Length: 289
Image (tube, rainbow, N blue to C red; front, top):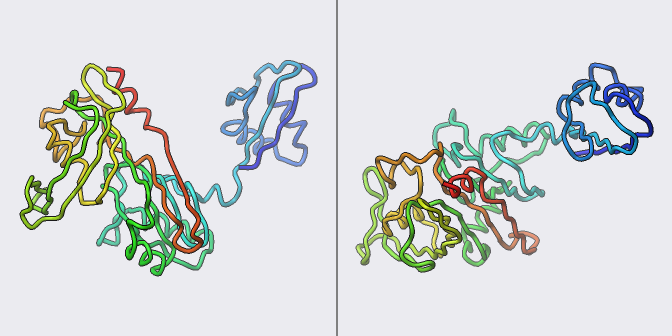
């Protein structure tokens, strides 16, 4: 974002102030900026006749060409010539075999085409459709393969936050089981039954009357791992239609699971990159109940 800042020298209305400061910009374009991009003393203001007083600070934020092309279904947190780190919104598939499905990959490929980058997005790891949060996506098969060959060596911290029903018996602990894909969902066994070992560490960060806010760190990245493991503790993720309570009446219209931290060694440059997003506001509103 490009930012212009001004200080008001004398009282006048906001639209007149902006027009005077941007003589080469049409009146309609100034009005368009005022609808979305003007801040008075740090607060976004769209009122044309807002009464300005001497000393007030006006800032105008203009989106660059590349900013305007950025996708709406996810946030690009980091980008270089080799990879993206994105914050996926809930409801968006990571990838799909069906070419008409909207996914992280199709959204990023549209962005790459629009910005004239001669490459394609490649999946590195997945999040469930209804889980939001941080993902790394490569711009080449070679980079994806480097992650695949040494995932545990490259990714040194990966954590989630969930809102779970009720109060867990212990404030922290480890969940360990063997997971196998069933016909409709992932099945869990406390003993080795030929499935894949899954290990999740958890810590309760906050409790309310109904819920617990839980931080989870994965030793393994199995399908639906966190959702299955919290069900094993009899404290499923809120609003989980597959592994949660059938009579879930929580006032949240999404799965309460978010991948909030992702830290890894860059597969090309070797730099240690660390990313973190805030706990979704809808989760914190739940914790007030």
